Each structure stands twice: as structure tokens, then as C-alpha cells.
Image (cartoon, rainbow over all chains, first blue to last red; front, side, top):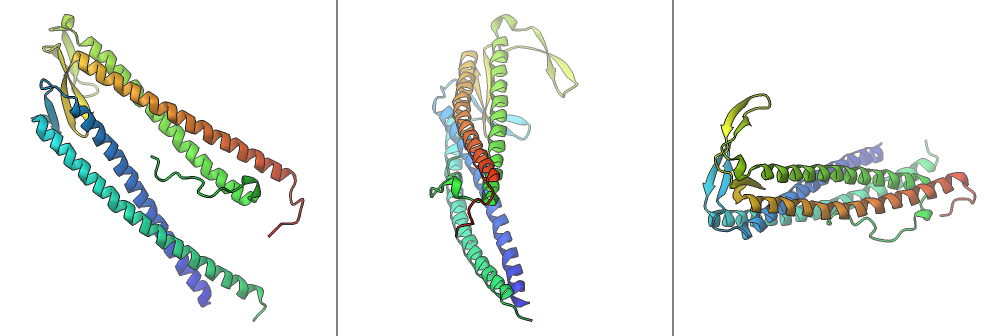
Length: 122
Length: 156
């Protein structure tokens, strides 16, 4: 039956969109965590005194780094994370739109199916 | 963590839902509660870690300068070492950055961390409590519904 087939394909598509959305949201939460971590570091850097040497972990060793360099580094990282968050947010919105549309489509097909089943035909 | 948790965009009376929907809502609430209590435990752990850091910094003091300590290279391999700088410690501030701090600064750093986590724990506790209340209310409604099954014919 073509109607059932359409229902099948629509529901698999819907599920696909849902998993996509889930991974996007996961992405978004990870970015949020990174953002807050970097913001903490920035706050910490803001109250450094000249006697506080800054080191960066490179592989297994600590490399001394200039305070200002470290500060700008964190700043650019924050910028990057913020733009990433914007991008992912846009993707999530778009995905939600698509999922909503698919859902409506699914409901339509389902009502049609039910109608077809309730009217007795051979 | 405030972006994706707008739980009730339009007000729906829980008593209007049927059992199937109620159990769905209940499952969702259970999931949220689980997640929140997990986060709570994790925060508690982090707080304990910072607290032990404060204690450890307290051990780095001038009296202990030059005393022999055992430095762990792996979990089971230690080598003897001497504490040569009893004034400064190096603190992990996150994202791969480490800062050399004096003992007082380090203690203060960890204390603010502990305090910060405490405020987080407090708000988390509140949300958990609210969710718990919602849960109890929901279960009450469900039980009430179960006890008078289809008293009136289902309304459209």
C-alpha cells in the first residue's frame, strides 16, 4: 500500500531528524560548558598580579607563557566559542522547523490511513 | 543551562491529561530528576576535591621546606623528592592553563571555588526539590485517575 509506504518513509525521516537534533543539542551543551570554563579562566586571569607566572599545558609539559598572550588567547577562544554557539543555535532552530513539518506530515498521513482503514473496502 | 528547559510554554492542567500522557510526563520528569541528581553528586565530588586541595596547600609551608616527600610517578611508583619552593604552588585554572600562585593566593582560589560550587549546589537543590514536588503531584493525579477509571465517558 502506497499510503503505508509513505508513512514508513516519513517516520524514518522524522526519526533521522530527531537524532540529528539530539546530537546538535549535545553539541550545544558541550559548547556551553566550554564557554563557562573559558569565562572562568578569563575571570581568573583578570586578577593576576605580575608575580603570577602563567603556564600552558602542551602535551605532558608546562610551558611558561606571557600573561598578555594567554589573555588574548582566551579572548579569541571565547569569540570562537560564541560564534560556534550562534551557528549551532541556528542549526537547532532549522532542525526544529523541519521536525515540526515532518510531524505534521506524519499526522496527515496517519489520519488518511485511519480513514482508509475505517471505511470498509476490499 | 537555562536555554533548553522551558518546560511549560503554555499552561496545561495536569488533571486534563489522560493516563498515557501522564505516564509520558512522568517518565520525562524521572529522566530530568535523574540527570539533576547525577549533576548534584558530581558537583559534590568536585567540591570535595577542591576542599582537599585547600588542605594540601596547607601542607606546603616553610617548616616543611627541604623535607623528603614521595612523588607519585604512577599509581604504584614513587620517587623521593625534596620540597624546594615552599612559597608557591602551581594551580590548574582550566582549559590547559596553569598559574603560579603564592600559598595564600592558592588557598583563596580554592576557597572561592568551593563557595562557587556551593551556590550552584544550592540552586540545584532547589530545582530538584521543585521537580520532586511536581513529581509527587503528578503521581497523586495519576493515582486519583486510576481509582476512578472512566467515570464519565471520554470527552472530545
